[in-house]
Length: 256
Image (cartoon, rainbow, N blue to C red; front, side, top):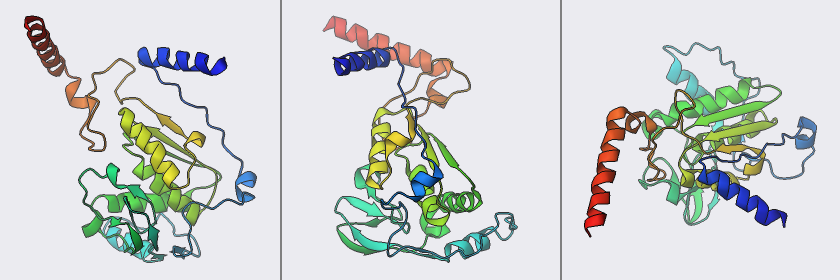
């Protein structure tokens, strides 16, 4: 009796434009340490040799690339079996190929045993700096780690941060994905599950970003492309254009 009632409430809330988000239960450090399950981010072929913590206060102006390369050079790239239909990277993160709509990038395709390489600016582009952020934030974290991704797509940055944290400086963590495209939210859940993360212990919030809490016009579609945005289409001119197109289509339907 309760389940049909809950589903009815969920449908009514979705019809009104709201989404219910599970209140996460954060496990204590003791609970996580005594857990016998596999630790995400570790494998027999992934080695993180940091010894004493690298200080994030290192000069990062002229020596930015040197400092990042020196840090990443202490990581042995992941190698192992990757199932067909997935790609991986030097951290051993599995990515469903359906998430990579361009079918290109620095990821190593699966379908057997693969050997990966360390990221470089040339091979990873701006993601190279995202990876550096994962490591520096993980190294400097203490007590509890929280990562928030605004416009999370399929949750790539969050899973990367989680993997790095659990390997470098394991502690309780909470991931927050804010993403307006429904399919991307589903993909974020799958991406977490594919990499050993329970999405129900974290927050996936279906919402568009704006300067306030007012309703915005947001195009839903083209999941994985990253081209959807409320910044351009929410303007007065865009809203007027959408109304004009809708009116023309309505008239054509009536004539038919």
